[in-house]
Length: 98
Image 1 (cartoon, one colour):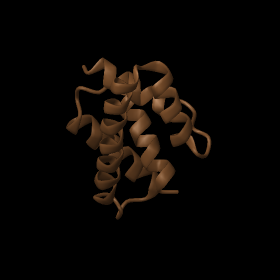
Image 2: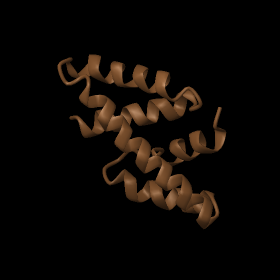
Image 3: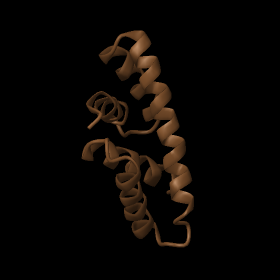
Image 4: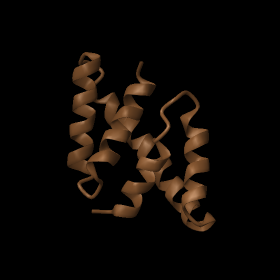
């Protein structure tokens, strides 16, 4: 398991109120040295893009079924991530797909 990336994802998405990305970025830079935080933020941004791309495959499903399908696809594609990280990315898809 990639504990550092999983932890960073959990930190980034820990405050799920509107504008979470601003608080998430601040939280990353508070938790990690600047160079590490920058690298992790880049990887999280890539995962956010990938999550939305995965979600496009399930547009034909209802909202709840699509959310479940996105989470399952992420689990298959990114087995190195923790459950909390996968659930956070699936939440992100749900947030963007409301």
